[in-house]
Image (cartoon, rainbow, N blue to C red; front, side):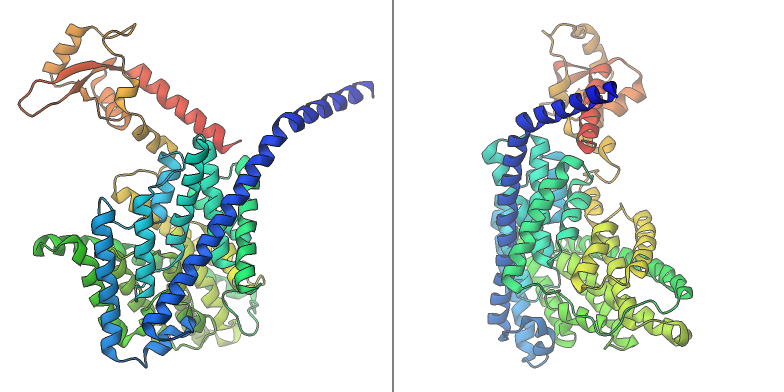
Length: 554
């Protein structure tokens, strides 16, 4: 008992010391997280209001939730011209304000979290927000969540730079901003917090959980102040699984939804490749590419106005089961084509809302078939559409946990957990093996940013040879004559290279060091700058891996 009493006093003493010395800093950081969450929440709501206002002004309807139905009553020339004008405006913005003519999105936020200490670009980010606002207001067939996430990331970057915080704190603030933005967009506090951890930070560090939850709650409060405590979609009737023998149908639908998600992602990438070839073949200016995409969207929207904007009206119709099998199938195919055109045309917007819509339509189409075969053992169409919505979206985002929760919080229906979880698990298992885990990570892989494989793959690209090499006057520097002989043999690395380039050369050559040179021209002799030792490169890599592991498990 005496020993127990001494141990208890020691534990209490350590706890009191922690409370005295670290609690004030933690409270301060939570207040900063709260500020970031409030700012990001307001940004998300203002972005949503801005889209509604411009969309209502251009299409002439106050109720943007029924825009697809209203567009059917408009003159066809108006439906055609609006996306073209929007594309032209987007093209001019990206031409003058982005260095590569590309609109920033969630993939850039993930890259900033992994490779840039939780920071994203400011100038290109502001231009991208304008492009996405114009795109979504003028008929672009994408979603508003991707731009909102990047806007929130810019707020977090501004705060991180203002406070001059390190990489760990910068990433935590980035996760707070993203969580608040998602929560404010969907009125989904649980899913928003997990989205910031699962998709952006890509780990579930305990130290980041509390501030991210604080920010997510702030974003939700702002949403409810603006719109009330209501769900995005209202479901009719019951969505209870009628018979447990029906669960295999949801396994099968999960496989189908995984393939649909892969098809949707690949269609976007194929369209982008085709767009690049056509642009090069026709010598089309960069600023004209979004206008051409707008023209194609306008032509499609004349016949299928449901592709205009976010598309929540069609998603609601799918969830309520008011579409026929032929309508659900055709609408899903046309939506995939419209999203591909919008993204390939570099108009702006995200893929989350389109994936929800395509998933709901896929689930509804599957429901028509399943209930036709087994009418006595089938649930309502709403349940299949709901599970399909989650399955496709989870596969596209690579976020099964947060997407499952977003589906629940969007609909307010928690009785369908088993069916949704079964479908989501099967779809993500299929899709993650056919793409690089998600749409965003595949986007990065296409830009030669290797994040899908984890820190062991991308950390090497963060270290420049110049920062690890030993200069000629350093202690333990390599022999200069040996370096010159190796240069004559073509065995060297450039000073601008990274360890991602250098380490494979060590493995191939088996040498202890490589000369580091500057190449001034093709005909010029390489100038020796120092030497990169294999052991130094491995030490730097191991330190980075240890720091990453410490952050993820703290």
